[in-house]
Amino acid sequence: MHRILYFKLAILFVLWCSKPVAAQKGAYGQFLKADTAAANSYFYGGSHFTYSPLQTDFRYGGIYGQVGFNLGRLFSKKIILGVTVDFKGWKGFNSWKPPDKLKNDFNAAYLPNVSTPEDLAKAEMITNAVNDVEDKNFQGNYFGRIGLSIAPFPRKFGSFMMTLQRGYCSFPIYGYYDDPNIDNLDSDFAFLDFGRVYSGAIYFKPFTFSKKTRRTSFTASKEDWKNYVTVGLHYERLNLNESSFYGISVNDIVKKEFLDKYGIQQRFGISLGVNIY
Image (cartoon, rainbow, N blue to C red; front, side, top):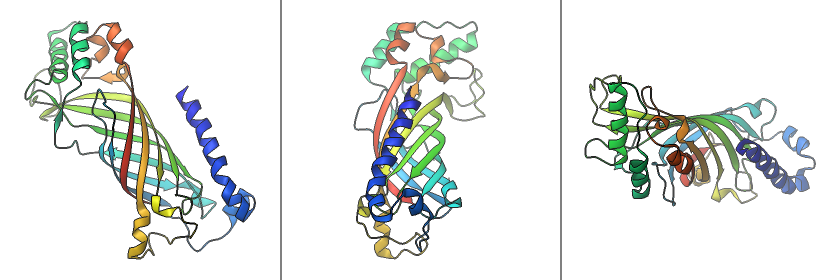
């Protein structure tokens, strides 16, 4: 359902953006074929800091990198249609804890359905993290995702770029070095992982709303670099039913009522960064 909605939004976005250019250049196909001195490159990327102004049950955002390969460059010097990879390989400085409401509901629903002492110990690790037990708590987050990006007019009209991706996120839990119940490769952390995380973002460059065509990153002057400042609006869908913790999941340790309430996490954020495209 969400993927169909994203596809419809992408089509509407492209149609809306095509109006001003169509008036100047004619058909969009002719616009793409027209040669230009300010050609897009095959590669693009940058770095961003994402933050959610809304309270989230699990930590959201942080500093992440982005790289992409522009397939659109194969047939046009003016469009970005590429494969984009986002990655956050640094967990951050601080520990964090879920909101009190989620913690209280988790404790009320805690009912581990596991068959071995090792799995019961794993369930206790998750419980300690949710309850923010000292030296056994959540410490930052990681994520990785891959998807498609499109920027119909990357050098004008705000340089809007839409990205749709799928990936994973991971929440490290501190205090489990050489724990006999898990195989965490001698790390200080155990990792609560989530797969099939869907996300979408719309990036724009506030200094490129002028109709003046700017130069590429390889020929840019100092005055041009402000044109790579990028603002982003983000959406992410996290599913607790897709959790994994060394052979068990959140599903195995709480009642169904908890997952009915918290299973789908809808997360929204904003970002500020630098993106070269």
